[in-house]
Image (cartoon, rainbow, N blue to C red):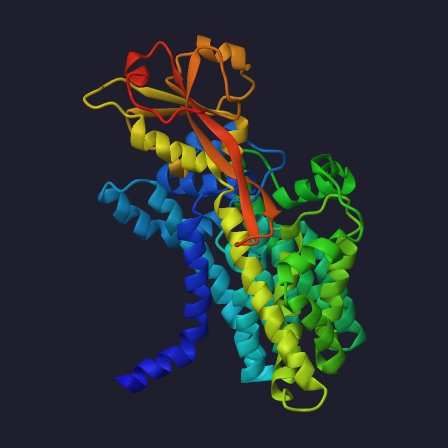
Length: 497
């Protein structure tokens, strides 16, 4: 029995560690942001509306650009048995959100396991161990791996590509990147091109066979997968990622959502993504020539992406596994030589970097946990705002800010609760509608009384005492009650003062 337990931990111990951390993030911060809204609403509609497409959220709120349903279909299929069981037991829908996020995390971590096993075979057990340690003390990869973003869905396929790359199955690696490019994120093309060029220059692939293989894969992915499925779901002939490419790259409309300087990925995003692995990955390139060929295409991807003015940290999250591999090689070399003359000075520095990474991860998690105020506000409203023995519907209007900061259809309850996300209603006109409650970013609205203020993360403040770092919170979202509704006014509310 002990031997079986030992074998199980030897085979799956790293997966349990990373999976436990990812699951902890899910249960502590279950709500989602606007970037995740399409996929999370699509998963909800697939699970609850099934073939009734007219009830799907994306037809009423299509977003700026269309996205593929293929990722949502896969994750929903995996989560469907547990969601069905919870529905039969009349469990709140919020637990279905846990189910789909855990299912997504399982998919992404399974592909990361495939990559990690190739790391073990090519670089050894110690490099694999440090790869897991570095990943565990970083925040963003494990926090994001359960979040239904197109970048995260692409990450799963890119992990497979990295694994095949390490196995020297180069055509399989390229096909994975083509799949990720045409279906989930067109910007993976910026990784595909440098990698393909390197494989051609090192004669690992032939140009003719690569063109033949890639063309067949691209035609199949476009015609038989994304266009076929998404044209049905969107009710028009559609290749979503082509429209995204046209919007972001050709029209450069993504700049309307903010811009950053060219160096931002290297001076801000990568230091936060990698933490201790940032200096270590640079050291790894110097210590092991084998890793240079893996670093160059990924580094080129980040460099090419820096040309696009609109930048977000999640855009380059697919670079993390390879950079972590380089950092793990450096960490292994430092650890193995820790008793030698010069290396013994690097060893405590490396340990200090790992502790700093862990501290930064804790602080970032605490801030992120407070970054979904409207989700918490709706939960408080459900707990407090329902009237006993009442058969009247309770209408809740959710403004755009609140819909973007924590509320999805998974957060909604059944009768008597009803919800409206109608946009463009001026605050002064809300009193003319028959809303029982408002969840709104404004602290005062005519015809309504502010019942509760929900705080959210504002900034980090340094101080001389203990703890030296404080998270400053301030009111972000307000729950308002209709003053004409006596049941609302007679209840005890915390107030907004």
